[in-house]
Length: 472
Image (cartoon, rainbow, N blue to C red; front, side, top):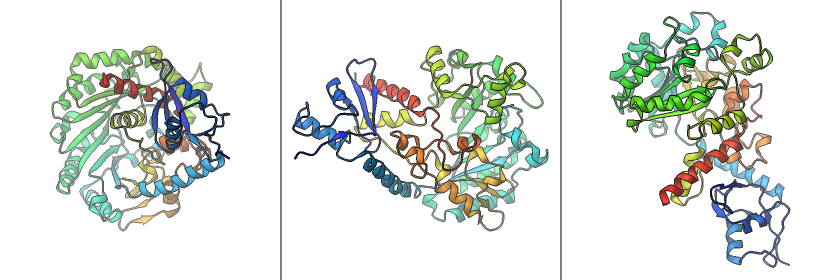
């Protein structure tokens, strides 16, 4: 009797609307990607079962569909078990990758953005956030990096400077010390900054020093100046834009992130045009994208429940991911958004005729990220710094780990999250952002889908369009 084959539950079909009759097939655990005709898609309906005797396709085509994973002789449960075993093995490999280090320069910030996590840690007292690294702590931090990962080849060469606001004018001396010492040890740097005091750091920017900046704004000047407020000077848009112009001349790569909600999403096209007018796009090292503004769950609930009275509601209109993507399409579909690496993975696989890269985690916080703060504490996730219950350990004298917390972070992957086991997007999504899981009241066994299937489809199509355009 011929073996029966069924369509795999991990097959992801993406309809190519501009090319009628064609569907891009992507497989969720083999990494295969192929163009399928309507005839093939008719055979891949969930209820269909085929053997070599009754498949209405050629033997060669059927063989290829089986080899690529779209048809399988496994049961659904066997496929789930296969994914679980694959995840376990692949996660072990991910844990062997280089350790990634971040220096939390200070918790203090010169902005007073009402949606920032800073507000949630301000209860520790005003002076708590004022502590910054001194030279002795910098020396200890570099030493601690070597203790955490003795193998120099397994320490990432780029250190991220984070805050608070790392590049405040008052931090100039210690930032210079960090960069000079770091360069002598073979490191270079990225920084996440609001860009307001950037003119004080121009000599430290460039491909060999602080080589990349993420600078956040809140849309056009009208919106930005109401929401990203300097603690002393108030309005900040014009100064940030002037500093971006100066910084680009140093050769530093800059990605401008526009925090986006329902009130400013329609202005993203104007903002992009403004950057063109300023000549920012003449630099290949400049990029701009729109990022969905996600507040803490308590803030989002406050806005939605108190539609008439909430102070937050006067400034923000929080959107779901579905609403964000829909409005983005309606306003201007070529404004780049957060794609979580989907575009690059698909485009590279198409261009190189290779399988798609997988991951069992959302980001390095779940395997090899270490954030060192000025109090001598170690954290894993940017979104949880300063929250003592999320502290991985201390590096003040010797490295002392909180093994329970460390285990929670480093053992969480899609294989440990029940809802991910049956999801065909799991090895692309990685289970979602752990920081957002916790901010929304979840646990380490919870996932954060954030409408990933919609993000996936949008950027798969974008990648395919780019690939096809280059082919012609």
